[in-house]
Image 1 (cartoon, rainbow, N blue to C red):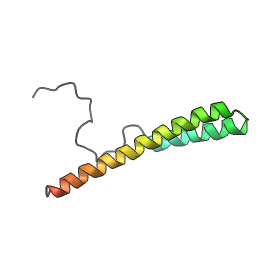
Image 2 (cartoon, rainbow, N blue to C red; image 1 turned 180 degrees about the vertical axis):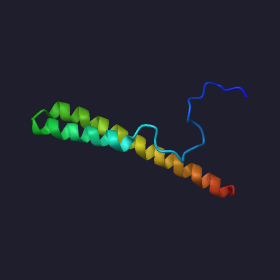
Image 3 (cartoon, rainbow, N blue to C red; image 1 turned 60 degrees about the vertical axis):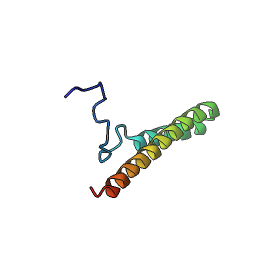
Image 4 (tube, helix red, strand yellow; image 1 turned 90 degrees about the vertical axis):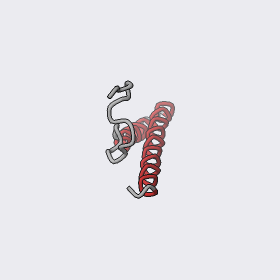
Length: 78
């Protein structure tokens, strides 16, 4: 059938892992933030920590939407 430019891997399939590995990215930015702090650069540290927080939120949203999807499937007896 016609495909309406939906990105690959989008849609109802929440079984797969998050597309970007959010946990890994978060860890990377946390480490960079700690390093910046140890060098006394609080501004740079804050920048990295904000990135880490962003990926944490993305990860939480991914899990929540996946759980909602599974609950819907269960409710439909699938």
